Image 1 (tube, rainbow, N blue to C red):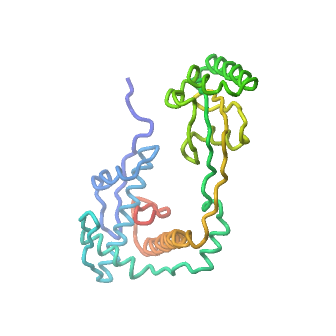
Image 2: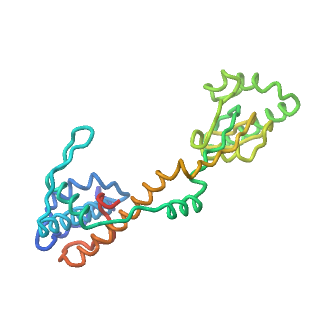
Image 3: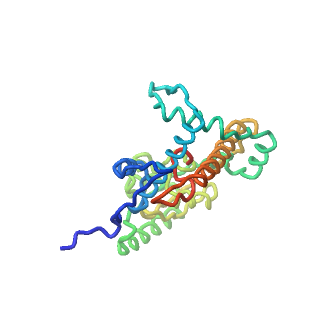
Length: 274
């Protein structure tokens, strides 16, 4: 029996940076920090990250840069090498702080990011059926349509039908009421269905779980967060983005001056940059 893996690693090449070899066992340990669909991709990402680290360490030694290790709020300390790389980046990779104009431009171009989600108050009756069971799905749809027809004749039956027919026991005992629902609290299909409904409407929404007979009791549109409250968050995001690009460019310069064997350093594949 052939037990070989189709995505198993080819024999790794010897990887070095200016003659300094990165041992295979070190790369193997680093792989756990770079999950990927295929083992070879995880290996390449780990090797690239270690090459970037070696480039920065060599440059910090060349420039005779050192720094006192910092501790975080939990008492964890940097290593001397991590401190040296941090000090190198702080000295060599200087990026401007985003100004008011840049922050306002980002706010205007990305207004949806700063809008709170619509708020819904709804109730539902779930007729559950697995997505891949075509027979059960068809039967669930028929049941949901029958319930919907009954409710169109007498909407006051909703709570009674929810308690007796809904497969969502959490809400069934409460007459099907879901309370206040906003973006991210339910599956995408349910959210999209709610967005298509009007207040007081009863309709069927299909999701991965089955068919929901839904009553939308109230809808409150989301509100825009004022620029003044969003500015600090925008500035942090823009500063981080610029810093990432500047660091990637700096690493590219170091790589261009170095002799790297065994791997082609393609892009910023280091946790220092991402």
